[in-house]
Amino acid sequence: MRGAYIFVIFSSLYACLLALSIVGVQFGQAHYVPADPRHTSLFGLSPAKMGQPIPASLTRFAPQIVAVHTDCLSCSVADPMAVKQLFSSRDVLNVVVAPDFRDYRAIEKSTPGANVIYLQPEDIKDLAPQFGPCLYRFDRNLRLIYVQPSRVSVYAKEDLIADRK
Image (cartoon, rainbow, N blue to C red; front, top):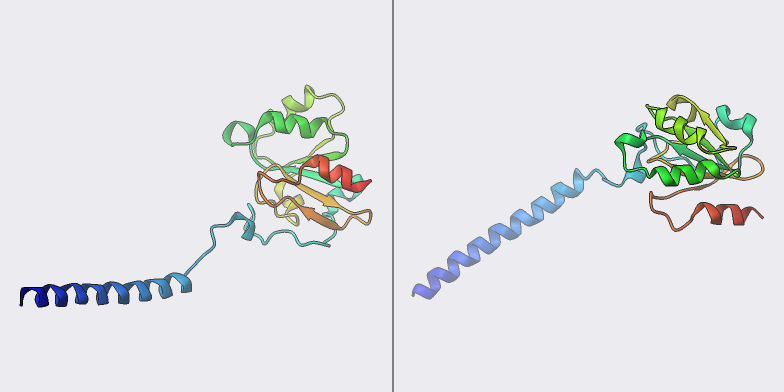
């Protein structure tokens, strides 16, 4: 008899947990907001679309590879050595839209021939960078053909340059 009571209690608990899990999953799915940074940018905009033209503020430079730097180096995980490497590449137009330019200016001064411009975030909002530095590649008609998918990407700057040839 005691076994029947235990069975009824555990069966009731199992039924309640099953019902809660079903309701919880449906509620979670209905109210899910992706945490993936590729769905929105730092500007709250959708990511850049393939084939879109280069932002007007960059047309006079006619770059094929652009690196957008959005974070101040002292308050982010951005590696100053990676920034210095990008600054030293003549194939890359470095666009700095970080709130604090001082660290970038120091790297620029220590890097001869650095290809760097400083703009306001509104000037490159069409690219909608999700992190910084973020690499973009444009074709000869200055249409977007590549956006770096994540901070750690297997598609390195060297691959972008090699694909151009």
